Image (tube, rainbow, N blue to C red; front, side):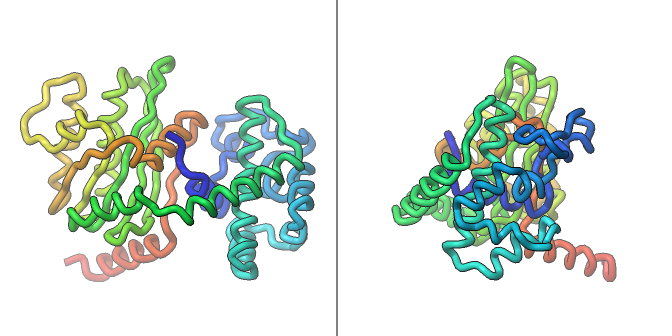
Length: 314
């Protein structure tokens, strides 16, 4: 199940702001890629500034959208550039900017992974088409959002982690995707983790559950609800009996780590209601890249708690 365009756009903008975009320069620095030349123009090294502001097809796309002035400034910092756009622009401009940036990156990925080229005219049409689609989705009643709020009303935990796994049988590997939300359903963080030597989809789901528990512990939550779409794994995580199945070792690790919380719940939902975690896992498996992002306000809150604890550990 594909995640919504607005979710993919948000992920791209967050990744751009923190320079987490897996450009060939970033991959070369991590020793994942040898050649860091731009796959579109082959003239210079591919970093984020080149992808989104300097590559010839990117420049033509911004021009075709009448937004070339957004790239003709002295701002080079990847955090300051989108921040500046959001500061000076109205909602329509910001929406167009975000959608265009996402489409530029998506077309680059299609070229690298599928060998598909996209012209600037096609890119511009796709940008406008997706904006129409997003606006249409916002106008429709959000049954999914209502279901999420209804589920969260049944729990009073301080955080909810939506988790899912993607499994590659050919290479015996998997990826875990996690979306963290607060008491009011606000975004707090997201994370994807890669795993090797994974024997089955059930093992992949079990490792995803373990990663969700570890994430909740690392973020310092006292009470937590972990929501996934593997009914078997969720049932085993809620159990207090010793699991002797093939995934028993992972389940026992999850059960031991539950002691770090004052309250913990594992809850099952259908795959169609877990699209964001699923997309995170699937993208990590496809790209071979792990990501971790936090909401800025949440990060500041976490740091404040750590500083207060250091001043008064008792």
